[in-house]
Image 1: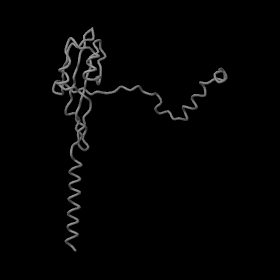
Image 2: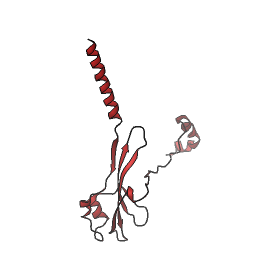
Image 3: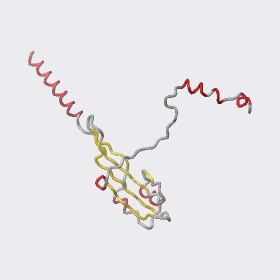
Image 4: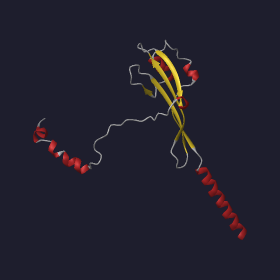
Length: 153
């Protein structure tokens, strides 16, 4: 009888140990899309335009805001490990530049090893209603409505 209990305890401890080991394993996520070299062979510098590039390799992840309006295809691989901060272990940026006639002028590929790490952020407009409850919003609207506005059709 004692042998069965010892065996159950060892099995339970082994399962717990295995669970802890698996839980501490790093996980990886992939974000974005960068065309492969074989897909880029179909794009001819000086001949292809924005529309033919979009047909060949798809729309970009991001576009430039300067005068040339370059297209950027961005992909990242991020490592998550327990409570540590996520770490970007790989980032590839493919830049397709266009000239004044909307023809491809250059195709460049960049990685983390090519320079400093740039954090991509999304800019979001502040709603302006943070810290204001629903009751305060309702009461605040009473002064903005006149009887003329309600009766005028």
